[in-house]
Length: 108
Ligand SMILES: [Zn+2]
Image: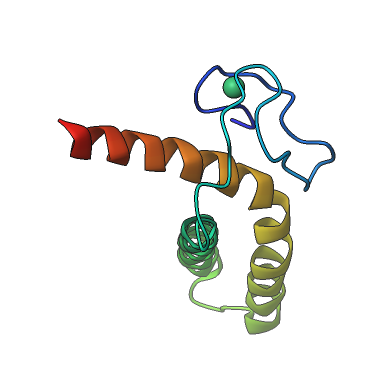
């Protein structure tokens, strides 16, 4: 999932967080326009909150009827602090793929 949306090249990050400006294999330019990455931020937020909601519901059901709110708070804080950081590069590549599919639909 951390690969070029055009050619599938997996070496498009110079570090875990740093996406290159363009694909070294097919030359596809990753940053299309100013504000392009807002979509990746929205995608990251949506996936994080979806995961948090799922974990919150599952943990609440598992602990019912004596819900340990401190444990839930720790789960919630960990989910919302750690996951979006780890998911950051994936949100970029998923957003690029999503954008490409959407753009091709518009061209038809
Ligand atoms: Zn490529």
